[in-house]
Image (cartoon, helix red, strand yellow):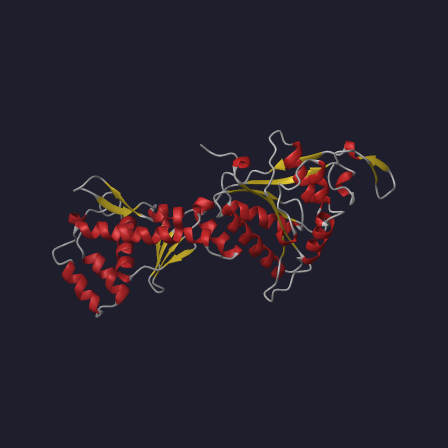
Length: 371
C-alpha cells in the first residue's frame, strides 16, 4: 500500500528563493493551514543566492520580527518545524564564494548542480517525503529544481507553486494571513485587509524518471547536464551502433565498452538480426557456423592475436549452447549496469524453449548500425 506523504516521519519543504522570501511562509501557510489534509513539514530547506540567504535569514528567522516564527505562533506550529540559518544554503562557485546572483551560463551550471545534489540527497532517504516549491528565485532556478525532482522524485514527493491574489502578491510586508486579521497598506497608500488575502497551492504533476536512471546516478554526484543526457537515453528511440574503430557499443547516445570477445559476439548477433539469418534474425547454436563470429573477432583483436587461436580451438566443433547463455548473461549485466531500465531494448533476448532456444537482438534491423 502506498503511503501518503503526510505519514512519513521526515517531511521536507524545499524551496528556491531570491528577493522574495515571502514564498516560504506563503507555501507553509498553504500546506499546513488551508489544505483539507494538512501537510506540516518537519524541516524547511532553502537554496538561494548570497543576498537571498541574507533576506531570508533576517525576514524569516529573526527571533523577534521573523515571519516564520510569527506564522508558527499564530497557527500552533511552534517547535514542530526545524528551520534555522543552517537550513539556508547559498550557491557557491568553485572557490567556495557565495553567488550574488544567477546571471551567467556558469552561474546557471553551478545552480543546476547544487539543486540537483540537494534533491538527490533528500530523495535517497526512504523515510523522507519531499515537497518542492518552485515559486521563488529566478525562473531558471525554479526550472532546475523541478527538473531535478523529475529525475529523482518518488511517489511520495510533490511539486507546487504558491498563488497569492492581488494586491497581496506584490506587497512586500505581506507574508501570510495572520490569525488575527489586520489592515496593511499598498505602495500607493491604499488600505487593504488581510482577511481578503487568498493563498492557493497549485500542485504541479511531473514525470518521474527515477526508475530509468542508472543505479550509480542515484548515488553519485553526476552533474546536471550529464544526468539529463542519461535520462534522455531512456526516452529516445533506441538505436544500436557498433564502433569497430573505437571499440565501443553505442546505445543511442551512451557509449559502452565491452571486452573484445563479448563485443564480437554481440556484434555477430546484431549482424544476424540485420541479415535476418535464422528465424527473424534469432539464431540457434546448432544452426550457425562459427566462421562469421570468428571473422568479426579477428577484426576486433587482429589476425595474429593470441586469443584468436584460442577462439578457433574453442569453436572447432561448432558453437556450444553454454557459450550462448554465458555470453548473453555477461553482455546483459554490463548493459544493465550502464543503462539500468533503459537497457531493455538492447539486451540479448531468447526465443523458444530448450533445446531449441534461439538468441538474438530484438531491435528492428533498421536501428542497428555498424561503423
